Length: 260
Image (cartoon, rainbow, N blue to C red; front, side, top):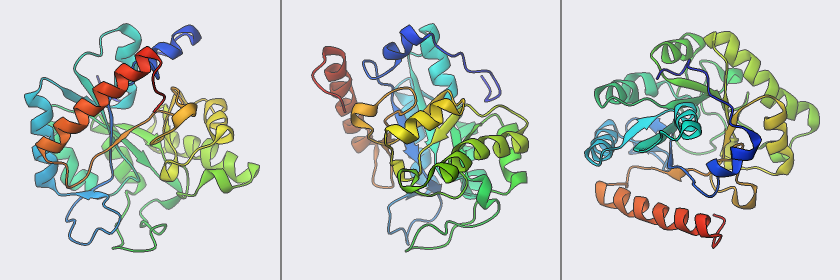
């Protein structure tokens, strides 16, 4: 299913069925490139991504966009699906990640910054400057079958901005991204993974069907999905360990023993 396929909005009574009681595996990537200078541990090399995707497929799993995963969950057909997300919209996604995703029959969600088109990761105080996707690059990624979501306009901590900037970052970024892709934007990704009740409600009110955080705790919902960090150190052995830990946490959610 391509990214342009409409995500089915689950009935309100089924929202709890999606999360947290049956929390899906949502993997969080950033840049795919040379990672020798990577102070924030946000980069994986193409060889490592290839190894990780091979591990995924060897276990009968397939990487898909968040929209496709949630759509499948609403129909009860999500067995074997894992969501893959790439934050910040780095240009290296086209060069290094996209060919590998195609090779392994996977898709993904790429969260972009329409306020920094063709710019750099200026929010990172340390580390190398990495080029971001231009409008043309974002359109090319969408046309390739990947889902495009919003990461806000400028990559700022939304829990610290006023109401006007909050609306711009959440609502205006959705409109601008839709103008670039020609498709509806279903998902929002909170910069730095930082959320509070106000920002989650703003994402919901803006018409997004889901939101991606990192460890939202008690705010966990379809609009604050937890994700699993994947980095250069995640060899197949570490991925298997993370998978087993995720299963334990899922069991805890199902029995009411945990919320994270």
